[in-house]
Length: 462
Image (cartoon, rainbow, N blue to C red; front, side):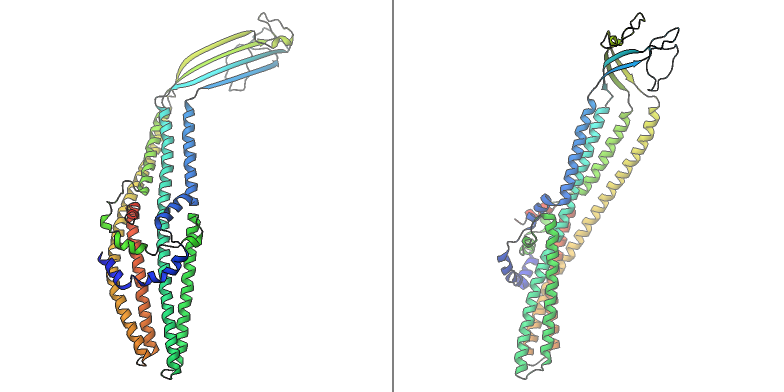
C-alpha cells in the first residue's frame, strides 16, 4: 500500500487524464476476459483439443479387443481328386485333397464347402485391462499436454497484454512530451519576436518537437503490431484490443502477493504433463508383462460339404457337387503359451524400464527448474518493489527541475540547451516510472504463473 500511495501522490493522475479520450471511443478489455477469449479461440489450442479426441477414439477402440471372431466362408471348387499317403506342412498354400487311390484319375469333380468358424479369447490374465489402462494413459498424456499448452498460451497472453499496457502508457507520456515541446516552441517564438533570445532556438525547438512526434509514431506502430498478435490468438478484431489503463493501478492497490495462496506446484501444468508421461510409461511396463501371458480361448466351428464324387467313389454328374451332403461341428477350449516369449518379454521390459527412468529424470528436472523459476520470480518482484519505491523521488525532482528551467528560460535567464536537458530528464523519469510499473506487473504475474496462481491473482482484482 505504501507503493500505491507514492505512485498516486506523484503521477497517478496525468496518465488517466490522457487516456480518457481513447477510453471514450473504445471500451477497454480486461485481462481476465482476454484470457478467456484466447482459451476458447487460439488456433493452437483448438488443434491440441482435437488430438485429445483422437486418443479418446483409440481408447474406445481398445474395448473391441474383447470381442470374439466369427468368420464365414463358402466356396465351390472344381478339379481332380487324387492324393497320396504321408504327412506334410501346407504352409498355407497346399490345397486339401482327401481321397487316396491306387491309381490316378483325371476326371474332374465339383465340390462345395461352407463353414462358420468362431474363436474367442476368454481370458489372458489381465492383458485386456492392461491394454485399456495403457490407452487411457495416452488420453491423460494428451489432456495434460493440452493443459500445459493452455498454460503456456496464458503466460504468453499475459506478457503481450502487459506490454500493450506499457506501450499505451508510453504513448500517453509521449503525447505529454509533445505538448511540452509545443509549449516551449510557442514561448521561443514569442521571445524571439521580442528580441530576448536568438532565432536559432526556434530551429532547435522544431527539431525536438519533430523527434517527439517520430517516437510517438514508432510507439503507435508497436502498439498496433501487438494488437494484431493478440487478435490472431483471441479471435477479436485488433482495434477492440485496448488495455484497461486502470489495471496496473488496481494491481498496486489490491494485489498484495502475501495474500496469495502457497505455490501450487503439485497441480502445476508443466509438472502435471511430465507426471502423466511417467504414469504412461509405468502402464506400458505392465502391458509388456501381461501381453506375453498365456491365453485361454474358446473355439468352435460348423461346416457342411458336398461333392460330385459319392462316398463309394463313384464319379457322378458335376451338378451333384452343389449342395451339402455332410455336416459337422467342433467345439474346444484351449490354452496357448509360447515358451520363448519369456526372453522376448524380458528384453522389451528392459527397454521400457529404461524409458521410465528417463521420464522420471525429466520429471525431477522440471521440478527443480520450477523451484528455480519461483525463486527468480520472487527476486524480480522484490527488486521491482524497491524500484517503485524510488521512482517517485526521481519523478518529483525531474518535475521541479523542469518547472524551474522553463521559468528561467521564459525570463531569459538560461539557454535552450539547459531547458532541453531538463525536459529530457523529466521525460526519462516519466518513462522510467512506466517501465518500473510494467516491471512490477510483469514480475507479479511471472510469480503467479510460475506458482500456478494466475486465477487467484485475478480474483483479487474483482
